[in-house]
Image 1: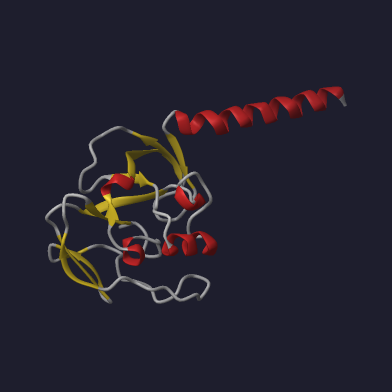
Image 2: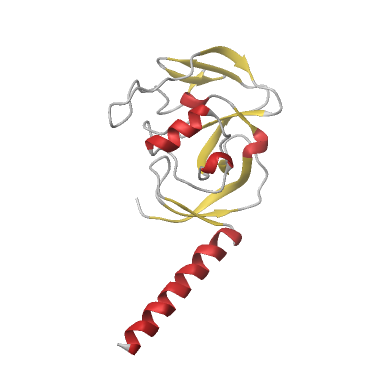
Length: 175
């Protein structure tokens, strides 16, 4: 019995250390379907169009609803949400158009960008519909070109570039 208690205490201690130090080391674990599930590394590379990034959503109604519906987990971002992983599909001077057919950047369709009317549980989604907008130096369009079911810029619109924490790269994925 004493041996089992020591093993249990050691296991809890190791898990606690990993939980605390992993985020500090720049490692992030993706458990959503927006990009392949797995382990990602924060790189410190420049934040540029086409980069896969991790960011903190704003504390707004759309992100609070996303958290309530389970699109975003709990975490340390404003409003208690977790980090999100998306790709920068558009940045400064890009022309963005959001339609019922999908999202277009400089006239080119973004893969998997046709907005859904309902989520996987049948709850209504409200896609952003916008005429062509030219992005300024502070705005980016964050989306997933990997999953057509991703909660991304189709639903929350443009994001301020200052919300981006880092460019990330997959280390180990299991999908």
